Length: 178
Image 1 (cartoon, rainbow, N blue to C red):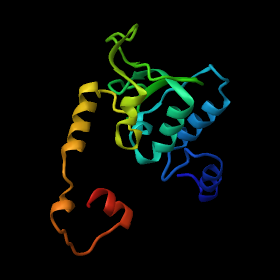
Image 2: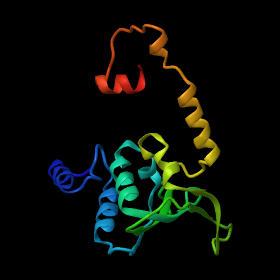
Image 3: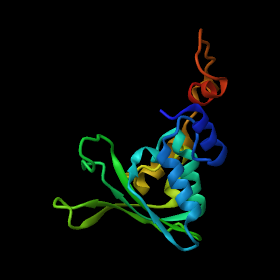
């Protein structure tokens, strides 16, 4: 764990130093900042930034300031000997971006070539809560989620709910319970 003074320093300088952050998110943010317009940035990183709450500011920065050119999924590979972490390699281009789909790639068995097993777009990512990046998500998944949300009635709209002791904040309770 980083010393508390270091954590506060990173938090004062980088949006990606959010919650109980992992230091690689700070390096990703700095890499984006240092990349020239229309330049590319890629690095091998753990996949946790794509869906964890602490990765949300980084995901937002990526969506706002870059175009995801491709994303190499290495989650089924043991990339680093003795380390059990799932990895991805995002290839980002800084600057203007549209909603063109980008390929999600995997290595072939021998690792000498890659193939696209899915395509995602910025709009698909933005359709998820907190801009989570789900590598296997399809356009049909997005439509299904939208239909469920549009045709559902919140439980608290039809029933009064009462409970005893609660932990956490009122905001979390409102978001996840009611």
